[in-house]
Length: 205
Image (cartoon, rainbow, N blue to C red; front, side, top):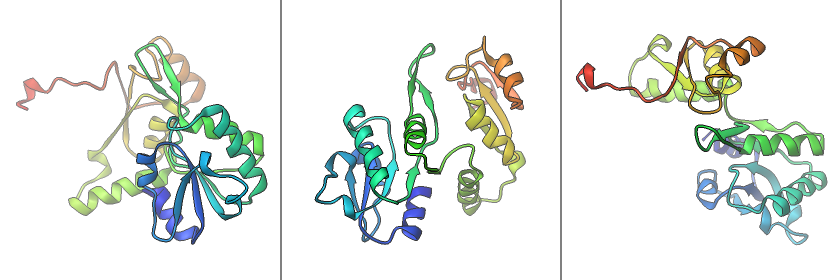
């Protein structure tokens, strides 16, 4: 949603090239803008590309399309937008997969440019969500908790926005690594839980 708002304000025409799935691209379509996967960009239409968006880590050929993205951004002085800043996400309790934020970081270093990011720990994302909730009912930050498995995104973002935070140890941060990572980063959650799954049976739910 934040990416779409940015496009509505800053990109008036042309093609928005994306890395990701068609379903994700559907959310950022705006009137007057034409979305195309990076794989569909070539010499015939590259001059019409006015933004590149990193949406997903799937839906494209990593080798071919990441190389093409690098060259689009070398040839065009256009914004590159990262819609999800996560570097990795858990596949199982033991394994993670590279997320679109990790791919974007790699490309950013290669092309030597600073990308626009919409995601944790950016406070803009929290403000957007907070405003949406307050449109429905009055609520204080004291009544909201940020739950996540990553210190540098979920917990840092929640802390910066003034929320209580819960670090869960069933994803990117494993139980044996939690204390070391907290000490190394200085990012301290309000609470630590083994899992995000809570048994509410005893509370009458």
